[in-house]
Length: 248
Ligand code: MG
Ligand code: MG
Image (cartoon, rainbow, N blue to C red; front, side):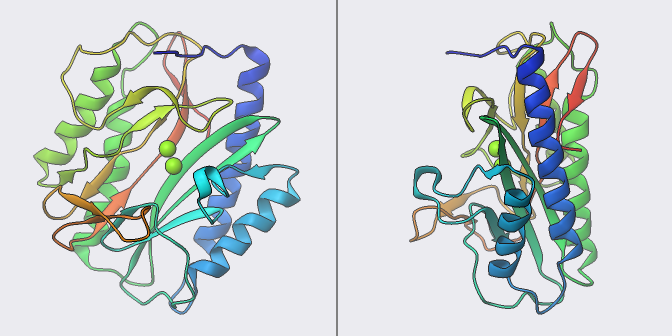
């Protein structure tokens, strides 16, 4: 395992990458409505990131063809953008990354399209809250498994599935670095967190079973039972006293 510790200048670059990404996600959120297309959202994200003097992390990453991942309803992550209009009642997970002077940020949100069902709304809220439960009381000296464990417990206690095939990750000059940050695990297990580590923490949940499959495009991960899925992710910095969220 090769976990990088970031110095002050590196952290400052990641803060800027995080800020531009947060603004990109805000722009996308305000552009979601029934009839909108994910191709158009992709264009908006690309143009905004470039206008800030930054670059999209995901575009051409291992051949990925878009600036954003747009995962609709039962798609968990890595959804492709299309010209199919979003419909009232859909939920859409938008995952995006920004590079600023060689440093990456990575964040995801699940957004409602118009009015959605109460159970989809609850899924979105619980997934977001599981992230905050995961980082609660976390600081340098804590074990990584505490984050994983708290996310898993929060979601499973509410009856949601926790996707295991994909995990959070370290982040820095690479989009994906060591260590893996699973959304399940044992309390007090794993590596000890230290000051200057930067992690993308990203619970992925389902309204049904946790099983997923890979679609024919070799990218998109979708629930096996066709039930909706939600995703919430931020890039964070581990500090002496806690966690600084770089993408909020
Ligand atoms: Mg992401
Ligand atoms: Mg990520």
